[in-house]
Image 1 (tube, rainbow, N blue to C red):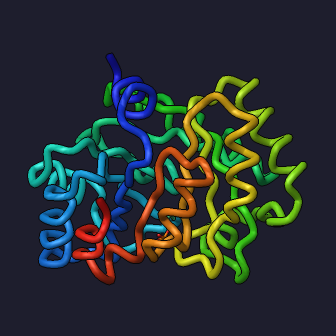
Image 2 (cartoon, rainbow, N blue to C red):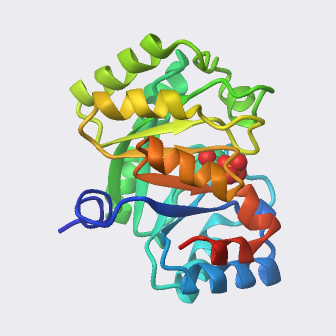
Image 3 (tube, rainbow, N blue to C red):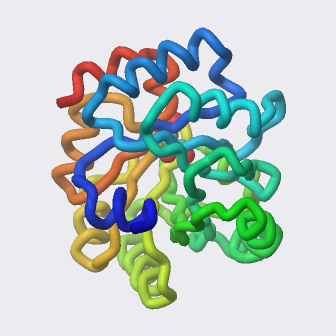
Length: 238
Ligand code: 1GP
C-alpha cells in the first residue's frame, strides 16, 4: 500500500497536517515543534515546503525532520528546486485555480524525472487558491489570481474538473497567513461534489476555526503559522 492509500484514503479523517517552512524554523524551534507533533494524535503527517525558500537547505532540513519523527514527511514544493530524496512522498501540485502554465504543467515536467530518480511517490493534488482578503505570497509568487471566495459555482466547476482529470486530492488554499480562511459554506459545497479527500489550509489558527472547517467537511487541515508561533497549540486539539 502506498502512502496515499494508507494516509489519505484508508487513514483516519479530520486530522492535521503540520506545515514546516524551512526558512522559518531554526533548529531549537524545529525541535520543540517536532516534539509536540510527535506527542499529538491529531497530527498524521508533516508537510515541508513554501512558496519561496531562500535561506535553507531542503535536503538537510528534511533529513533532520525525518530523523526526529516517525510520522510521514510529505513535500509541499513551491517549485522543482524544493525536492529531496529524504521525504516519503510529494504533493504533486497543479495550481488549477490559476492560468499560469508554469504552475499548471511546467514545474511538474521539471519535477517528474527527479521524482523518478528519487523513487518518490507523487500524489497528484489539485491546488486551488481561494481569495482570502489580502494578497498572499502564493498569489504573488505564482502570478495567478485566486478564485473569488463568493464564486461558489466557479470553485465547484474547478473541483469537478480536477476529479474528472484524475487528481487524487483537492487542496483548498487561502494562502499562508491568510486574513480569512476558506469559508465553511464553500468547503461544505465542495465536499458534497467530490469523492476524493479534501485538504483545507491557510489562516487556520484557532480551535473554533479548526472545528468549523472539519464540520464543514474538510478531511485534513494544514496548519503552518500558528504552530510556528505556538507549538503547544497542538495540545488543545483532541
Ligand atoms: C499554507 O495552507 C498553508 O500553504 C498553511 O497556512 O501558515 O496560514 O497555517 P498557515
